[in-house]
Amino acid sequence: MFIYLLIALGGALGSIARYWLSTTVEIRFNGLFPWGTFLVNLSGCILIGFFAALPAAGGRPMPPTEMRAFLMIGLCGGYTTFSAFSLQTLNLLRLGDWPRASAYVAASVVLCVVGTWLGLRGGTWLFPASAP
Image (cartoon, rainbow, N blue to C red; front, top):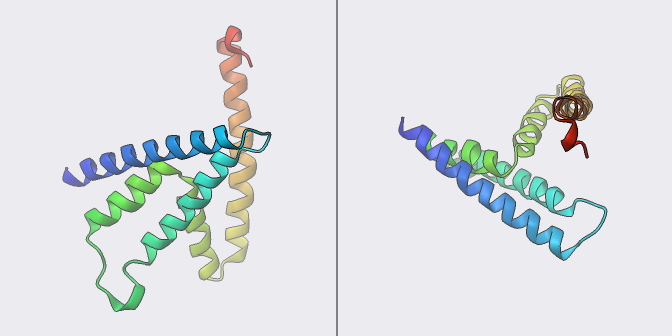
């Protein structure tokens, strides 16, 4: 049960950090490109890569499961799930499984955009007054 509390705490902190960084950047660089989201995703990928390397770097022992869950699932997951997607893709590439990694990237991007469109269509169908 304690591990779930750590994940929840990490998720809350990650979500707060995501909101702060994305809104701060969007206010500063008001424009057509979503710089805030882009920087959150990029920095989240850097963080999860760093956290994933902790057990392997310099022969150090693996950090406790609770710490990894707090950092990688909680903090990075609350900050951005793009970091998990990127780490999973990188792991496939490191295994030399280029076809599966390519399919994962292409399917994720295309199907998630289509899924977002379907959700938007469904929402505007159910709630026509909220149509953008």
